[in-house]
Image 1 (tube, rainbow, N blue to C red):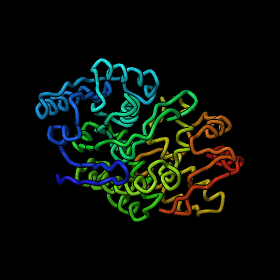
Image 2: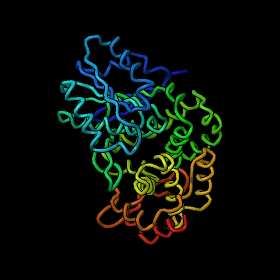
Image 3: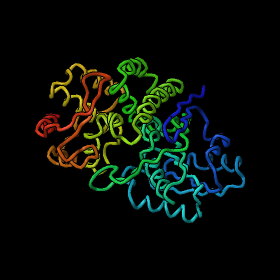
Image 4: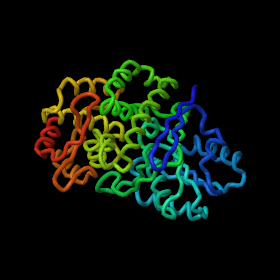
Length: 362
């Protein structure tokens, strides 16, 4: 399998490397390690599969290094201040100095939480993202957003902290449950929805290969997704403008996740529903056509993703959660909507009755 790279520019540039067996490459893993302390943070699902591989590769390349592991329970419900505290305690026990590095080995939860711990320890140490899910490879590992959840909402406590490097080892996708692979494809489709309509056509044409785990096709999808995100992040590192487009579907999706206590739908599934709802809201506001919504919905359904609001969720309660969303402003709700396939934009002051109308008929 060929190795692909995507460079993220800006004030703190770094490289995304995509390929096979990267977690065995001690030289590549050790390259960002400036000091002698490394903490490999992972979860109970991923650590038994890959933590020893990473530690052994690091030790072979850097025999002088002091390496520890921190393993948290798996699941979005664990992305809490308590687990953040556990990771900070692990850094303290290691005696991590300011040139230490946290290796975030896992999906988006591990990447967000470990990255946030790295952002806070001694006011900021290095972090290397080692994503093991498709969703993390194409989204959360890139761009430096780190956070934990509160009962009131998702990602409400966090920091911008770009990684020193991202190593996306596609070999790890072989052990990824089919449901998690489909969840990642939701975020892949998002890039087509917001900036690249032709990418949606490519995804539709390669849907069977993607769902079947074809390594070369998956790496191409990952590289194209990361290139889109890298370009946007480079232009808007702190989400003052264009970067907000990456949240297409997320205002609805985050509200759904929080309403279900992060225990029913996973993030990608919630975002898939959220994108369809955002497309329907766009059509209701006269920004786009229903035909575009149907095309997006059909692709997501081809990937085996849900596209309708789960039964039993209260529209008014969902709207209340949206008011806490980070994209909301004092003047009202702010959504990422679209003018059709590949043409997303931020729309301020969206009428709440229009949002409720979509939720009540979802």
